[in-house]
Image (cartoon, rainbow, N blue to C red):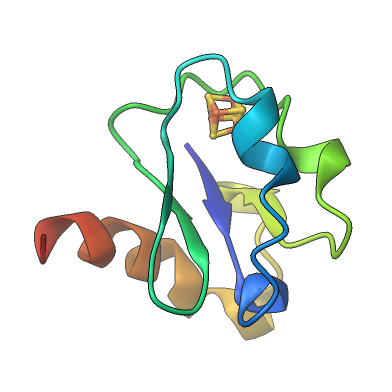
Length: 78
Ligand code: SF4
Protein backbone atom coordinates (compact mmCIF):
# COMPACT_ATOMS: atom_id res chain seq x y z
CA UNK A 1 0.00 0.00 0.00
CA UNK A 2 0.80 3.67 -0.05
CA UNK A 3 1.48 5.35 3.30
CA UNK A 4 1.33 8.85 4.75
CA UNK A 5 4.40 10.23 6.52
CA UNK A 6 5.46 13.11 8.75
CA UNK A 7 4.79 16.05 6.39
CA UNK A 8 1.06 15.48 6.95
CA UNK A 9 1.30 16.05 10.70
CA UNK A 10 -0.76 19.12 11.66
CA UNK A 11 -1.46 19.77 7.96
CA UNK A 12 -4.20 17.31 6.96
CA UNK A 13 -4.87 19.03 3.64
CA UNK A 14 -7.21 16.19 2.59
CA UNK A 15 -6.73 16.64 -1.16
CA UNK A 16 -5.82 12.94 -1.15
CA UNK A 17 -9.18 11.97 0.31
CA UNK A 18 -10.91 13.56 -2.68
CA UNK A 19 -8.77 11.53 -5.09
CA UNK A 20 -8.90 8.09 -3.50
CA UNK A 21 -11.28 5.86 -5.50
CA UNK A 22 -11.82 3.42 -2.64
CA UNK A 23 -12.09 5.94 0.24
CA UNK A 24 -9.33 4.28 2.25
CA UNK A 25 -7.76 7.47 3.66
CA UNK A 26 -8.91 8.27 7.19
CA UNK A 27 -8.45 11.20 9.55
CA UNK A 28 -6.52 10.72 12.77
CA UNK A 29 -5.75 13.20 15.52
CA UNK A 30 -2.82 14.96 13.87
CA UNK A 31 -2.55 13.41 10.41
CA UNK A 32 -4.29 11.25 7.84
CA UNK A 33 -3.70 7.53 7.48
CA UNK A 34 -4.11 5.05 4.62
CA UNK A 35 -5.75 1.74 5.46
CA UNK A 36 -3.16 -0.84 4.32
CA UNK A 37 -5.72 -3.52 3.49
CA UNK A 38 -8.05 -1.24 1.58
CA UNK A 39 -5.49 0.65 -0.54
CA UNK A 40 -5.44 -0.67 -4.12
CA UNK A 41 -2.07 0.91 -4.99
CA UNK A 42 -3.53 3.17 -7.66
CA UNK A 43 -1.19 6.04 -6.79
CA UNK A 44 -3.81 8.75 -7.35
CA UNK A 45 -3.26 10.33 -3.95
CA UNK A 46 0.50 10.81 -4.18
CA UNK A 47 0.75 13.69 -6.68
CA UNK A 48 -2.08 15.75 -5.18
CA UNK A 49 -0.53 16.00 -1.70
CA UNK A 50 0.68 19.61 -1.35
CA UNK A 51 3.34 18.63 1.19
CA UNK A 52 4.50 15.39 -0.51
CA UNK A 53 3.63 13.25 2.49
CA UNK A 54 2.49 10.19 0.52
CA UNK A 55 4.78 7.39 -0.61
CA UNK A 56 4.54 3.85 -1.90
CA UNK A 57 5.62 1.95 1.22
CA UNK A 58 8.84 0.60 -0.27
CA UNK A 59 9.79 4.10 -1.47
CA UNK A 60 9.35 5.78 1.91
CA UNK A 61 12.44 7.87 2.78
CA UNK A 62 14.50 6.29 5.56
CA UNK A 63 13.86 9.09 8.04
CA UNK A 64 10.14 8.39 7.84
CA UNK A 65 10.26 4.59 7.70
CA UNK A 66 8.47 4.41 11.04
CA UNK A 67 5.38 5.83 9.40
CA UNK A 68 4.87 2.61 7.44
CA UNK A 69 4.00 0.88 10.71
CA UNK A 70 2.21 3.97 12.01
CA UNK A 71 -0.34 3.63 9.22
CA UNK A 72 -0.88 -0.05 10.12
CA UNK A 73 -1.00 0.60 13.86
CA UNK A 74 -3.57 3.36 13.55
CA UNK A 75 -6.15 0.90 12.28
CA UNK A 76 -5.14 -1.86 14.68
CA UNK A 77 -5.83 0.46 17.59
CA UNK A 78 -9.30 1.48 16.45
FE1 SF4 B 1 -6.32 5.47 -2.24
FE2 SF4 B 1 -5.00 4.89 -4.47
FE3 SF4 B 1 -3.84 6.40 -2.61
FE4 SF4 B 1 -4.23 3.79 -2.13
S1 SF4 B 1 -2.87 4.69 -3.68
S2 SF4 B 1 -4.67 5.48 -0.72
S3 SF4 B 1 -6.18 3.46 -3.21
S4 SF4 B 1 -5.65 6.94 -3.82
